[in-house]
Amino acid sequence: MFVFFFSLVFILSVHGVQAAGTITVGDSLSTPNGTDVVVEGYIVGVPVGIDTVEQSSFTSNYALAVADDASETQVDDMIFVKLDSEYRSEYGLQNNPALMGTKIRVDGTRDDYFSHQGIEYVSSISKVSSDGDGGDDGGTYTGSYYQGVEGLTGYALKQSLHEIIDDHTELSYSNVWDALRHTDEDPSNPNNVRLLYSGKSYSKYDNGGYVDDWNREHVWAKSHGDFGTSMGAGTDIHHLRPTDVTVNSARGNLDFDEGGSAFYEAPGTYYDGDSWEPRDAVKGDVARMIYYMAVRYEGGQGELDLEIADYVGTSGPYLGKLSVLKEWHAQDPVDDFERNRNEVIFNDYQGNRNPFIDHPEYVEQIW
Image 1 (cartoon, rainbow, N blue to C red):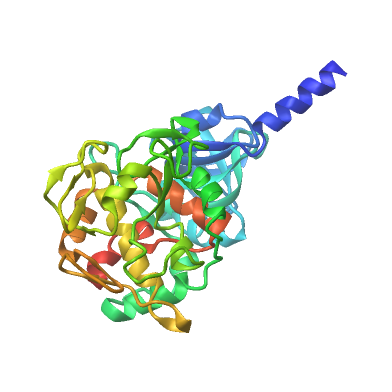
Image 2 (cartoon, one colour):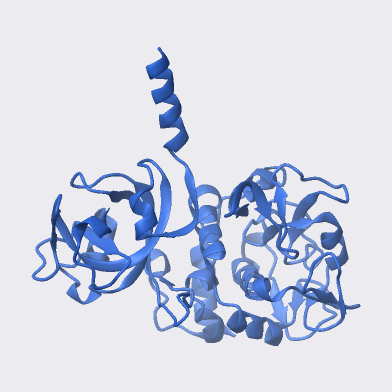
């Protein structure tokens, strides 16, 4: 009985656990089977056996070997990624030998493949462009989600993206609480959420309307379109984030711009009578949420037509300031927290994505 109980506890403790943030191949090799992981590494070959990886003259599109070093030859330092049918034509090395050495991000579940440490049940794969500091430029989501927008710019691109991300699964406002506990989980503490403007880590269940609670901030202020908390724009978690109650109140419905007085409860934040400037680490996050809203809500089927203005002091379904948001988007590139959040919203809640996290270049192509 004791052995059975111990085994059951162990199984429950590892199955379905969500790894916090992106991890290396080295870390993934010691991660228990059944754990959901997001792993970055370089494509180094095709596994065809427990200790055999083809690194040239590829004969299969069914799996990839991935490692932390693009020149890795030791199989023990590789993880095997099983490619289901939807990824084989795009990532299989038999069809795409030029992908050898490409850095990718894989979202899936740890599960042995060929009796070797592996990843199966893959939900997304994307290419990652490395920079000199070991970060990246946001990568590019290379699945079929954005099929058909190639070569489009301006209004045509905006409309095509709208059609792709439209008609998402809508949440009730009460369900937003639980969603944010998942989407905004602190990677360093799974019991907490990370607050947008202050960057503080708060207990997931210290939410509500009291001064020391966190609540649901509408980054596109709900009075800019008068959508309130109704299902649709009012509950779209692509722009709803946990913030301290006091900070949320201070931001109110201000446009986004630079300058003003420092706001002591959110270090690095400034505000004045008509604008709010968030801390540097989330300036790009804010910009990309605003871009998403302006594309998702285009006035069809009785919905609002939200638009970004290049001034502050806006009213109606407008929010500013476009030129500053573009600067913030460039200054603060997409990071792992945003990518993970985008995946969670897509896979677990709304079924749609923020295009400007997946393809940062769309901003300049539209605006």
